[in-house]
Image (cartoon, rainbow, N blue to C red; front, side, top):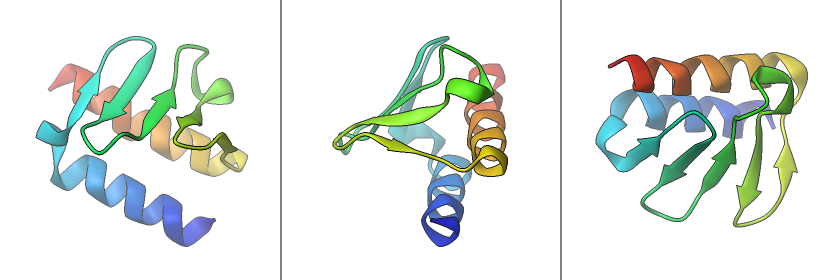
Length: 71
């Protein structure tokens, strides 16, 4: 899981134009959808297949996605 989270965060940081992010959802143009409406504790992948992150990875992914909203 750690490796895939690193790849996800790298993509968020390097390809911000591929992501549509609002208060509740982060949607990648490739079909990946991440729910982030419940804060970092509820941050998880909804589509294409439900998947939860370990706690530290939730924080990292949520932080990277929130940075896209501010940009």
